[in-house]
Image (cartoon, rainbow over all chains, first blue to last red; front, side):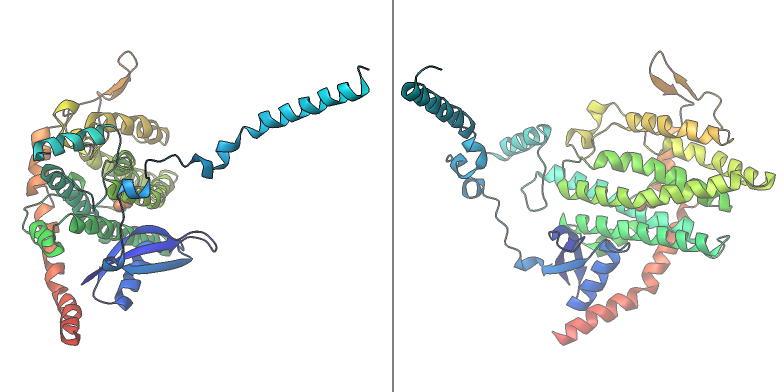
Length: 103
Length: 305
Ligand SMILES: [Fe+2]
Ligand SMILES: [Fe+2]
């Protein structure tokens, strides 16, 4: 008997989500069991069965989330653009005042 | 780190709301408690299919027959999901079934009672499954993540069980006096087992399953939630709850009721309920009758390998 991890896509285009596992002696029975257990009510658009031995698990957080600052990869780190736009606008206004004088 | 220090660190993480996965390290006591708790739950799903099974052939219409059959299939499916978790925690399925049919492990009190009428089918699907959903809803936040995820799926399916049961009861309550009496009598049979369902009011600080975060709510809180959800719904349709002491105490903010006999509950779940022996021997018979299927599947593979 083998353990098969079951992944389900609930609608076309959606991600495959892990929903559980089945124990079965072979592929054919594994997919019958998976259908009976994980899609009795049309919940699955697609199923993936993966032999558990083939799943590579990584849980080491030093590897997955190394303790270095990586905010420069994220949009959120660039909120300063709002302030910078304001400063540039001010710059132009001052420039205009210098050239054309107060009016 | 010593073993004890590791256990302490683990407990602290659980208290902080962290979740445990099957492949994570866990203390032996946590694993043993998970196995015991989830195995009893799984056994209850499996044994819970039996009382309703008796009514497939006696369902009053084709629609009801299909719905009861679908519900029973769901319950066995729930058992499958939960037995997978127990197997992953280290207890083989053969051992699980062997312990079950030999009375070494338990299943829920409500499945130790016989059924007498179609009224029981409605009351079970509505109110027994309703009681189960209250506890399973709380278990969605279990510290053991695979269990919590399984509970989310099970609760989603249970929604149909409750509605189907409620519909059976409501239909009868709109019918003849005889039909109404059928429901009233069924409610009277099930009320005591329902009040026992969530277990004795163990003080939360003494409940080890709560301490490990396997459960998230104390028994008495679950029972109070159950009463708050169902008492009005039951009374509104003309059914009388057979407990003269049952009332909501607004000063204390809680329901008061006739204290169930907890020794009786213990006797029932240890195999001395009115239908315990019969249910277990039926399960034993099914296990024996299907042995050839398992042999055929496994034997065939052994030869092919
Ligand atoms: Fe269930
Ligand atoms: Fe159910």
